[in-house]
Image (tube, rainbow over all chains, first blue to last red; front, side):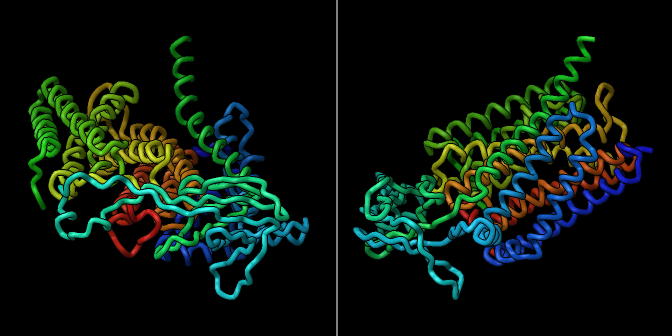
Length: 263
Length: 263
């Protein structure tokens, strides 16, 4: 017998795991063919959430049945991390937000967009999905200023693309999009900050990202608003999976070998 | 198809020539000479890579030209590491892979330097790409061992080296944490730049599917060890098919256009 643990229970669990991995591969490939918009609509729907819960249950089952040998710390960390990522991901999904609203009476917007004209303040979050009412945050954001930074234009046109078009302005490559904003609680200024691509603002349970802008005149900015529910769980899961895999596949064999040499 | 008459281009042709001579020397049983030529090719590739770095002013891993050049450069240290620490051979195949990687670099991809668009300006850029590059070349080497097993049997090609099955397993164990870390860093970056750590983007889903195929390899091999070595080998080869899809298809084909289309 080659299986790790000989009992029938263990065998079934190992094959269930194998099956679950297979289904996950198939779903990922299917989603890749759909494109991001359709894929996210499907993966955040009810049946796929049920699949996520099933996966989580499988991970818990594995933790209980197979973690007998406690020295496999990396293995434990990877499974625990996977569980946390699943839990945090589902808590942060639109469905998780509905559960939060019903169970804890915490009404948060899962995600949306804010259009803020220069000099004005707003708390309205719009949703890209058709027919979803705009929602309100408990605080307001005021856009002080929006501006675009460019890379300095190259001294001479030495690439082929430059020869094709005579237009200089089209070559100006963007270095940064910047929105300077102020957070207002009941009209009082609380926080100021500059939002750039790769540099969001975090306030009141939300992250605010530079998303788009008034391409014609630069007189408004569009921020994407994302709730931070479940995010810490996901990050903890990332650390556990990353550190766990390094420990399990790299450090453990090295230590074992050093131990063997010493004996 | 174009020949590059720049210093950069000439160094790339020099690398290809050195690798090719190394292959010829190895097939005519001149092992020492082959190793020296291989090292010489590595130096030429590294010079080309560093020149590129200096020229563009950021870590040159932004497009396929730069990434493939970097991969071809990595083949030599990888070969040395594998023989020294894993008791895995296959240098000649590594050299051929290096030449194969350099063919599009030398004749197809354009070498115009690009400024970093805002989304790529983060410290996560280099570690994310480097983790994936290392993961990918190691997994390709694993698949080469696996293919050797299916083709010529499990026996080691030289005395002092491990069997092909063991070689595949060791390589997957070394490569897997790289894929894991690459995926996690990519998620962290996505959170920072786009607002979500997971966007259901085609490239994300293909990388997840790839990661899951290697999870399946480790799970299956964990279950049956050496009982079905051909199945083990087959899964390792399927993994590389997924890697190639992630790496090329998504970048080059318009049907999967998504967030990663600048890569």
